[in-house]
Amino acid sequence: MGQLVRIIVIAILIWLAIRLVRSVIARYRGLTERPHRPAVPRMLPCAHCGLHVPEHEAIVREGAAYCSEEHYRAAHR
Image: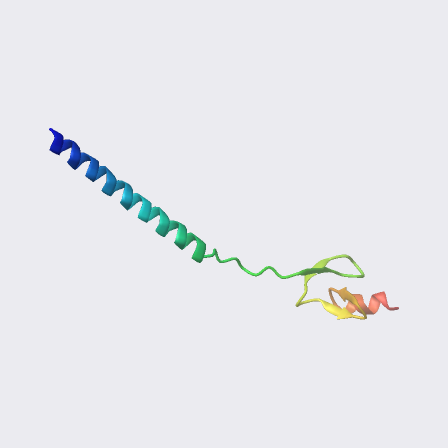
């Protein structure tokens, strides 16, 4: 009977060790793998109409952003 208890205790300790190792590995993987986030462009409001446009599409002149050449010209008439 004493030997059976000893085997059960050893089996439980092995099971706990396996769970501990798996949780450490999962935690390590979670720290090293960052979720991929698509780059969100900065949005700038048009100085003429207020429409927000991506920074790479905006026409920036004289410190102000415009959604089109027409709005730049209209703002400076």
